[in-house]
Length: 442
Image (cartoon, rainbow, N blue to C red; front, side, top):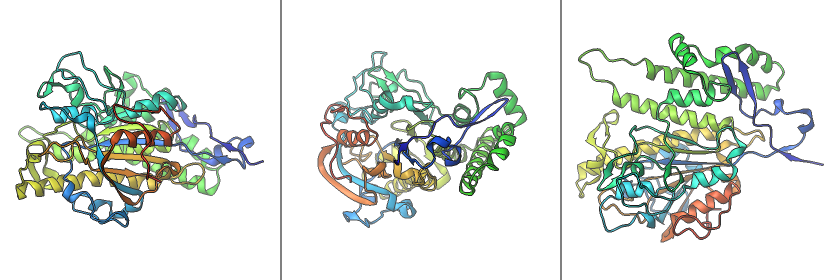
């Protein structure tokens, strides 16, 4: 009888300084599981970008498969078959008569709940979609969920017209008053995922490894060589590819740590930013490859970010540019920023497309990746028709590669219910207006 099994999630190469998690490799399965059908894990990822996305250069003119790419979505060209554009979705929880759309929209980004108007400690929100999944089935992995970001900043104070910084700087919420802080340092994230027996190193070992620039792979090299000799050829190739990826990521992170500035020189902020974003994308892909977690949130910037993008030739500050008032020069800069943001998402999609699960299927086919912003357009601050990218197959829950228009009648919360359904979590309702999984994704 053919059986469906899920391979043990605790596959490591162990060394004196810690343990390196491994991707799923059929050669490592116990003999009792040989010949069984392997059930790949199902994953959700939420990718936030700040200050809106200009719909005129994001939303395709054509519906269905073979949709046209605009200036902002042009970087999807190589992964278009794995990415759908969803238009006409509504985030009703973002509306209010008072200012503060950036913090309010970021706060409800994954909760679909109107946040309490306060800049004090009495914050109040809903639980976010990633945490609904993590609390239901997150115990299947070493990390129930993972929160990553780029911009620093605490959760106290007024960040937007009387709204707490907690709303503008967090998209993952474990409960009404419990934002989940982002890890913004790639080194910290790497050590958490790949450097210790319990996903942590003590302070002395972190300092020693930083000083010596000792690769985590150096501690498990002998085991890796011995293990490779016992594997099928296809698994040897996958192991080698994985170890190479870990080492390349280490080098990329070391490059960030080693960058210093001489007196009188300005730090290479823009270059650092681009490298850190790509390093975070690499970390997310590796975390999924090893099934260390199945639920990830990533903030490319805090709500209402005023970052400049000098590395792509945009000198103006993002938030100020987003109040474009139809100025062609400002719009051109916003299109360039949006294009770069989509390119980072496309890079991550491509990484997951090229990784495989234990059953031979692509990781992207067993994942759903959500990409969007807190508002539709930075000038109007609208919460209707927010542009969305949805990548991956979700184990059959989504047929990607299409433009789907929901006519500004479907709540974003229904999309989140469909994503939860894809990972086997069925809360019934979600947020303030989620009543049923969004239809038409298959």
